[in-house]
Length: 179
Image (tube, rainbow, N blue to C red; front, side):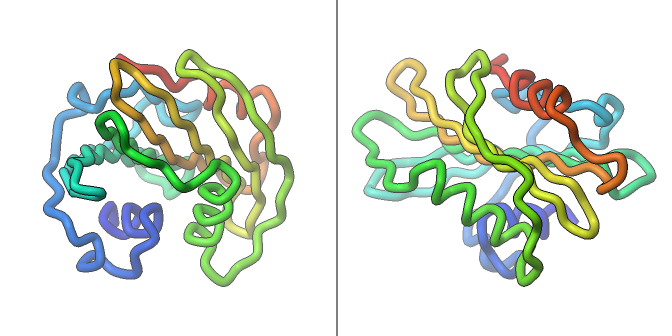
């Protein structure tokens, strides 16, 4: 199930499309703190790989969290870390649009809100969408730390009822930080 979720986030149609060798890592090796509401006792999977673009290594670290015994809530994050002089061509609006398309495939979720908030890493862009199956928050953020460009994409989904409200959305976004 985890490779499937990863494939959705990265826009792949099957496990074999991932193209890189992913290695399991311990939770403490994931570089970010991410503990959204409802997932305090989550079952977590953490993976890492290195791939190359523009002749430079990109460290990809992925986290997937699911609630024990239920399908929702669930969350996932993909953090790409690249060295100086890397050119990023994807802006937040495009990244979020693609993430919604991948996550919901042919279904058309209802856009409830989109915006920007601020956490300890800086500005974070998000969209809040409602689907028949889930109420989801998708987010995108970039920041530099010690000449490393960090590119974060993620999502957090809960059951459509009772769904997400403003305070919970802010709690998820503002709860993301570096270890």
